[in-house]
Length: 460
Image 1 (cartoon, one colour):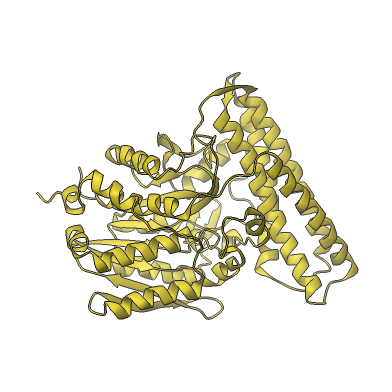
Image 2 (cartoon, one colour; image 1 turned 180 degrees about the vertical axis):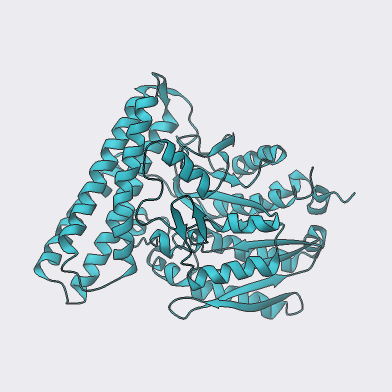
């Protein structure tokens, strides 16, 4: 039988490749990403081909590249969340390695397919921080994440109980087309987190994969995330490795917890669920842009975990109410319907909802002590909600002022959110300014994780 591990090389070879990513200092813009792939296609015209699979809402072409041939199919997609662009660097490195290393390419026995950027419109709204991704202040001030019903990753059809979503965007239709065309055995939408440590999602349990993911992460000098998971409904498979589940799983867990399982602003299913129809092994490697030395610190603290959860919940509820209150004040007066304002409207109440969920969890907790990693991740959640949604609201109102169309009410609100945002940023920094992780290290983990998952495709 064909041995996929031998085809790609040994685990040591995967680790070597993950550690050989060259030094990187910036993230490519959409134009630079496209130009880089076109340069590779021009240099290897018999190996790399390209086709247009769709058009963004603002008229941007969406491309699908094909590299090599083989009896298996792997689809790698960048920009599914446009505030998570580390995948752009991973894509350029992967395609270059496939192009220049014939033994690597033929040994993989795989047709590789790449969507470089599934949401070019959203990616362009983040380009203000790409030249210096190490500057966290710049990052928070130039940050953009689309509202859920405008995210390519979360706008696939969903129907369950009282929930229904079928408003697929043109970008989502393009990604669905890519999945249908390539019928992937391996599907990897490229994500990255903001801070903390690395963590992974897989669409089905594969115990043989977990040690290698841990080893890749350690060899590249990136800590594992051992604090709070993104959602309490995720099944923990190993340290920092989760079974991704579906939106139906999240709906059931939220409903059982006594919360609204499908609140206003909710969207659809994930692209990984759509890829399940082809039996794809899906992998998500979440790599932090900013590190946290305590991300994998399991040392027990003197703080009771229940109390930490309650404090986090209270701060999130306070944050959400402040932001939603300010938006309610300005909504009758705003004149510009921007993606930034639409996103702030939807995400701000989600901070309240996240806080209420933590308060409910706290009621069910026992008296165990929290770890250093858990306390750090809870503080990180608060900072994330404050700086992301507050930052987007600040950008939206500042844009209206700069355009010369702001009413007095909007001007006052812009001044207020500027001061509040500056205070939140200062508070986050006072807790310890998270150092940026070298891009080569996080790209190395993401690249290595792709190779590790690919090597498992034919394992029993």
